Structure formats: C-alpha cells, structure tokens
Length: 83
Image 1 (cartoon, rainbow, N blue to C red):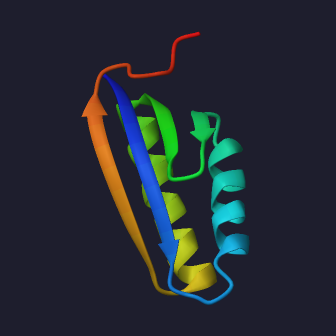
Image 2 (tube, one colour; image 1 turned 135 degrees about the vertical axis):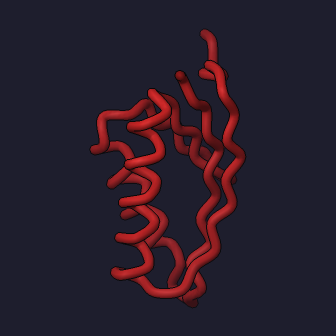
C-alpha cells in the first residue's frame, strides 16, 4: 500500500528554524520521497516504511528538541506532484 503524508512540525521553542531544518534533513535521508515547502513537508512511500520513519523521526525530535506539535494528514494512495 502506498501512502501520501502531509506533515507539519511546530517546535515549541523561540529558535524554531534549526529543529525544522534538522527534521527535514532527517526525512530526506530516510530514502522516502520528501518534498518540503513553506508550510509542510510531503512524504511518499510504502505504508510500512513511511510509518516506521514517522515513528522514528517523531521520537528523535522529542528526544533531541523537546516539546513540539506535529500535524499529519495521511492518505492512502499516490498524491505525488506531477510535472
């Protein structure tokens, strides 16, 4: 099963940009298709791999940067941008 995810990350810190940049870099190194933009990051891939990466990434974020809010829209199917 293929998943399309729109993930938004809101670190609860005054200096919020470094955690966001680090989280995007970590997602990009996961092997999944990742498309960051100004408001959210789109992630695409196999269900099991996407859920594994999201779980590991959220845990890493909380352990590394502390409190944060994540919002995710998860849709079964391929919603990748088409050129």
